[in-house]
Image (cartoon, rainbow, N blue to C red; front, top):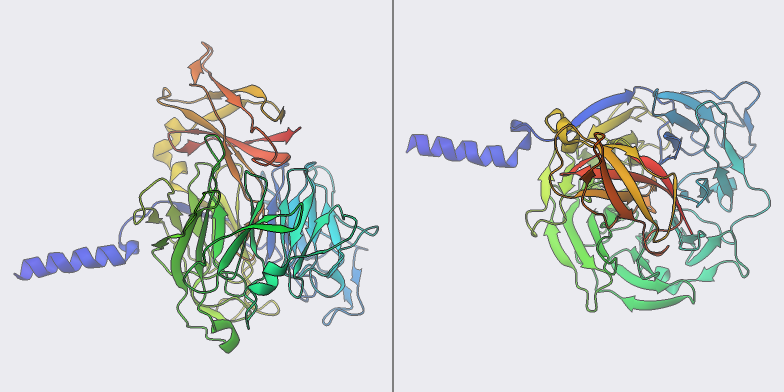
Length: 533
């Protein structure tokens, strides 16, 4: 009997404490001190990463070049600011270059345009109605932020969400006190009233940074608080109202995260997942130990009678990030297990990433991964890199930079490698050696790979967008799996794969994509391809 009880004890504790067993995934420190805590992060087609904080944060840990100081008489901390609040990371060398941003980018939004430039919108104070642009360049050039002076937002945008549209323009949805949408380039008539955002606002808002996904039918899936609609932005009409998602509020300041699963097959179906959140009232009452929500809702947004399928994550999580991996699986990472969003309003960091496997049955979709050691909570980001790793940056749950005490401001940059990058899979990892630099819709093209072991089964070729990550949501995130032929040896050590580009811009808006070959669940290093009409 004693032996039986001992075995039962060991079984229970090995189940509830995953740290007792070796868990998948590895961590590495890329940059000990990036100079800023990145609140907003985006990966460019030149394999550089734009990291951006707010400008009225006071001194950062990296200075601007000589004669580039920012003068702002309204800045509450530094009237003359010689510190950088944006930096550019070169992924080849892990080196940093300070960038100059002039207006306040606090809780702003962004999106890449079809030409690969990054449009950045709104913020606080002097940034409230601003458009900014960053035109990426190679590492030998000195590209920097541009403040657009000839256009401005029709309505101030603070905590808004951006989404590129099929015509290459960008819709900007919501924001604090902004129950409307507008576009870049600006359209005649300016902001368009969108009543849904007001309908879902509660006493603590919970309608900020709405989750916006472009569906393959051309409409938008917009989720705020605990409700979602299908929105026809062309005529400003709600096409469909979805059922309420149980579990409380899911958007800022109670945000979990959301992702649209990979588009595949005939692209007629799109499924959206929303995970995590905070208990209602935690923000209003500043309850830092209120348990985070652990439930997820999954819905086929394009179905005729869609309903939410509910499941639970291994951990409750507030302000986690959901990153679409090249395989179609989803990495859930960052965040806290208690509290809410806001300055110094969360506790118990969630150090364990989890992998969401969409093709598994409900109840078996989540896998707990190797924990990190650095809490990344409020104002942290997560982005897929072209080599298949996930970049983690930021975390500053304080009004200014604070390096002592609980959950200090985090200036480091890390990378998490999913299990598909483990050494024991190196011999099936493909190398993408040939791919066009530009393809058109429905275009047939060929990809060529090399791989150490013989190819068994279908090698996928998948288009992954480069989203704008901020406040636990990746704006514009998308993965499109292409129709492919079998990988055929060509006699020169290469396998050739016939591919067909996405059929239209509703499935994949125009722009630059990371294109991965995926062999038995292991992705290649991506090559950048421009998709256009």
